[in-house]
Length: 329
Image 1 (spheres, rainbow, N blue to C red):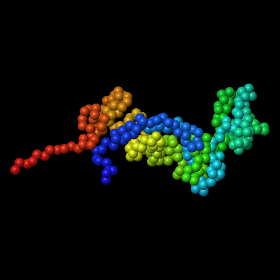
Image 2 (cartoon, rainbow, N blue to C red; image 1 turned 90 degrees about the vertical axis):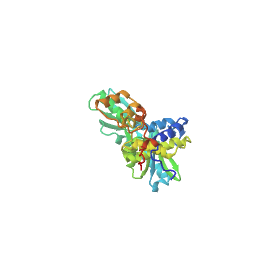
Image 3 (tube, helix red, strand yellow; image 1 turned 180 degrees about the horizontal axis):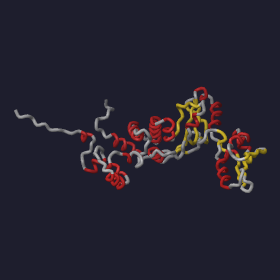
């Protein structure tokens, strides 16, 4: 019973203080994920990235777990890794444009290609819908039908980014182990692409990109991912904030059905009260637009009551008392 919240308790303010105060103590330590030599943003920069719900994190990561029949064997997981890690044409071949002959030359880097198990046939098969192709030894030449430097340059850029093998957007993959199970941890993200492999356990694919999780798995999964990531950032710095404060934050960001950020384009800009919106940012804009539309402010919130100097509807301020005088006998 002691854990139940009293009616009128200002949970938002308490949560904000409980996250904000330790947030000022955060060190800027960076942290190496085992295996991935990428430094993952932690501390304050990552926390800001999360509450701003950026379209893409600075260093996106993805963890891909496999079904039980594969995950126990390192060899099987390594074989699957080669199916997952994206290899682009520019990784295994030199691409050169020859303007005067109106053609593009692709020369296979045999040493790199052999290490990655890629042949000239794979390269040739990856190039789709280009001009006239001719193959000689470890080279492929593509000639365009008519002279057009602009089209040649466009094709050159497109060919360099052509995917030869793997899942687009997932690079620098390594095999990691946790509790006797092997899985793949990689840079980048592409859940939809990873799920096309039938060996992948769809219920255990995770990325630190909240927007991608929302897009593929929906709002509830995004809310859980947001909660997990915020908790991880704080706990990694040994700041043990009660999980319920973080839940208030995660729920506030996700309650509308899509993940909003904290700023003026999200939560703060979508408040019901005009005065509360104006108190945050772009004051004149909010007041002018409210005046033009003849909007009303019912003063139900906290910020707007402070502005007009009324009792704040929190705690005892939510209770109204009425005095009934005793009847005279």
